[in-house]
Amino acid sequence: MTVFPKDFLWGGAVAAHQFEGGWQADGKGVSIADVMTAGDNKTARRITSGVLPGENYPNHDAIDFYHHYHEDVALFAELGLNCFRTSIAWSRIFPNGDETEPNEAGLKFYDDLFDDLLAHHIEPVITLSHFEMPYHLVTEYGGWRNRKLIDFFVRFATVVFKRYKDKVKYWMTFNEINNQVGMMNEWALFTNSGLVIKDGENTEQVMFQAAHYEAVASALAVQIGHQINPHFEIGCMVAMGPTYAATPNPNDVMKAERAMQTNYYLADVQVKGKYPAFLKRYFERQQFNLDMTLEDEDILRAGTVDYIGFSYYASHVTQATADEPADFMTMGKNPEVKNTTLKQSAWGWEIDPVGLRYALNWFSDRYDLPLFIVENGLGAFDQVEDGKIYDDYRIDYLRQHIEQMKLAVDIDGVQLMGYTPWGFIDLVSAGTGQMDKRYGVIYVDKNDAGEGTLARSKKDSFAWYQHVIETNGADL
Ligand code: BGP
Image 1: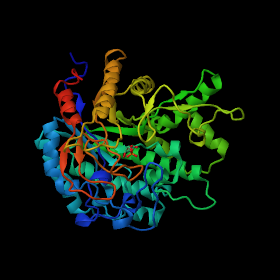
Image 2 (image 1 turned 90 degrees about the vertical axis):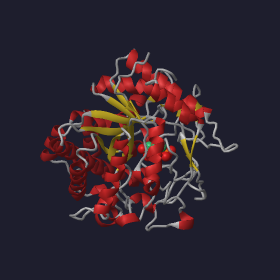
Image 3 (image 1 turned 30 degrees about the vertical axis):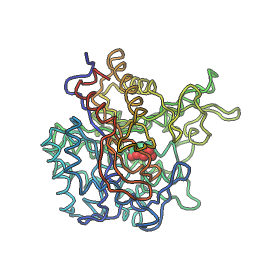
C-alpha cells in the first residue's frame, strides 16, 4: 500500500548551469556561473573577473546536456520519471540581461526540450533563476543590489511564462533564495545575487537589499504568471537545513531557534507576503538604510506563492556562547557543532533522514501549504568497477529519506506534492565546481579534470529508483 497520492510527482532535479554546457551556444551570454573557477571539498570556488575556459576550469561544458538532451530524456522516461526539475538559463534568453528582445535560439532550445519531455509524459518543473544570471548584470549594474534588476527579471519571467504557458505548469522563482544568509561568504553572495562586496561596504545591508529586490521580483512574477495562466502553480524555493540545539540548555535552544529563522525569513515574505517581526526589528537595530517602499509592500502582499519548494540535504547543530545574546544572523558566524548521532557524507554533510520529516512538519505547521521536496540527495565519490557502479550507499540514503516522507504523509498529514532528488544525472557541483561530487542515479563519464567520453550509464540506484516510482513509493 502506498501513502502517496496517485498523481504524486516523482522526478529528478538539475539546474541549467550545472549540466547543460553549451555555454556559448546559439547566442547564450556569459553567466555568473561561467566566471567561477573550480574548488574542491576543501577549497572554495573563486570568482574571476573574466571567463577562464580550459585549464582553469574544465567543467564549463558540464555534461553537455545541450547536445545530449534527446537521449537523456529517453533515459529519464525509461526510469519512469513523471516530472523533471530544471531551470531556464536566463543568459540563453537574454544574453546580457538588459536587452528588450529575447534570443529566439535560446527560447527554441527550451521549446524542444519541453516538447520532448511532454512526449514522454514528463512534466517540466521550472526554476526561473537557479544560481544563474547574465554576468553583464553584475558588471554593469552590480547584480541584485540594483533595483533595475527587478524590471529585467520580470521581463525575462514574462517572456518565458508566455512562451511556455501551455507546456509548463509548475514554476519556482528563485532557487534557495535564503541561501546567502546562512553562509554569508563570497560564493553564496555571488551565486544567489550576483553580489561582489566592495571595501568598506556593510555586507549584510547589501545582501538584505538584494534579497528584498529578489522578493519583490518574485512577487511580481507570481502575479504576472497567474494572469498569463491561472492554472500555473508557482512556488518559492528555500534551502532548509534544520538546526538543533547542542544541549537542553535553553540558551542553546534559543540559538537554534534563531538559526531556524535563517531558513524561513524569506519564505515568510514569499508565503505570507510580509516580513517577519524579528527581521523588521533586526533592520531597525542595525540601522540599515534599505530601499523598501510602500508599493513594494503591496506587491509582496499580492504575490504570494502557491506551494513551498525546498531543498533538504542535512541538518545542523548549534551551541550558544556565554557572551552572546541569541540574535538573528549569528548562525553563520560560529563554527558548527558536529552531531555525534549521525554519519556524514565525504563532504562533511550530516546524513539525517528524520530531519526531513522534521522539516516537512515544520513547514506544514507554519504555512499550511502543499510542499514539494525539490532537492535531496547524497554527494559521493562513485567507483566504476567492471563498468558498473554499486552505489548501495546512495540507495540507502534515498530509501531512508523516502521512508520519512511516508511517515510525514501518513502519520503527520503533511500535504506533499512530489519529490525530485538532486542531480539524478551526474553534474557539476554548485558549491565546489567538481564533477566527482556525484549525486546521480545516472553516471556520466567525466572527471574533475574534464576528461571522459560523456557516456551515460545506469548506476544500481537507477533500477532501485525505477521500482520505487513504479510502485508509487510502496516498495522501497
Ligand atoms: C543546492 C543547490 C544545487 C546543488 C545542491 C548540492 O544548494 O540548489 O544547485 O548543487 O545544493 O550542492 P553541491 O553541488 O555544492 O554539492
